[in-house]
Image 1 (cartoon, helix red, strand yellow):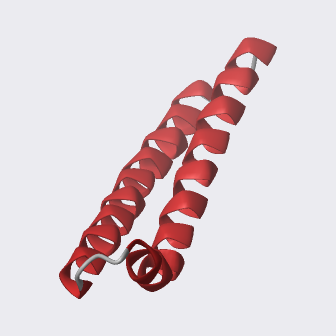
Image 2 (cartoon, rainbow, N blue to C red):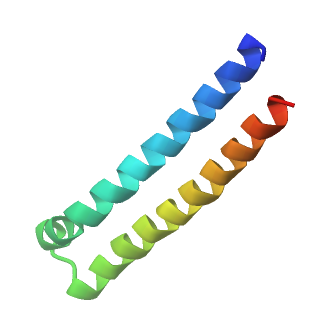
Image 3 (cartoon, rainbow, N blue to C red):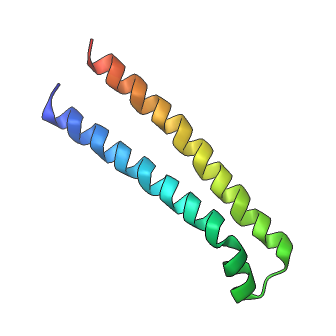
Length: 74
């Protein structure tokens, strides 16, 4: 495996990690953010849906990263 491929894998992995962390933080902080800003409670669900979308995106990209690694080892 080349070092350039390793850099690509590492960059993609870091991006996935940041998205997972951001989605988790937004889900945890959603009630507090809505209360501080003064939004109606229904807007809290937007944060939860955004976090869910981030987790789904991360799951798809983890699978793609896994497939890329499998293909590069052949």
